[in-house]
Length: 145
Image 1 (spheres, rainbow, N blue to C red):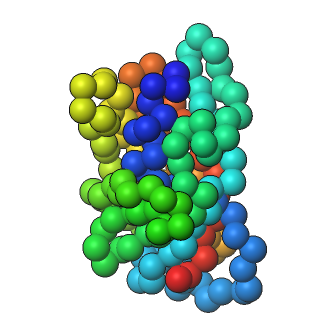
Image 2 (cartoon, rainbow, N blue to C red; image 1 turned 30 degrees about the horizontal axis):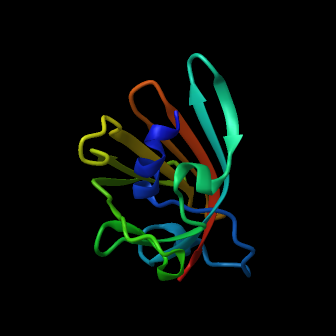
């Protein structure tokens, strides 16, 4: 299952930051967000789901969501240079929904489709990504940048 870990890095996603109270509009896609990854689950039909580390799946601790450029990228401090394009963005029932897909690394069959649902109220989010026989769930939170 770890063969898809380099691809999840592409998704470059986030999680819980302690932050001061924010305005409701801070999580509506109008401002860039700094996001932190908190908890990662890796799942397969044969093995079920198990908690793994950020390092196990190649995720940075912090990422930036740039809505203007429609891109998610790791912070410079992460040392990672892969980013992912936001292909679709919708506001539904108090959530900001982002979606995209990645081909993976050259010569390795590990492409995934992904969705992130960010609460417009709290900035907390859930990322789901699925590929060939593997799925990932990442919990996190964002704060305005």
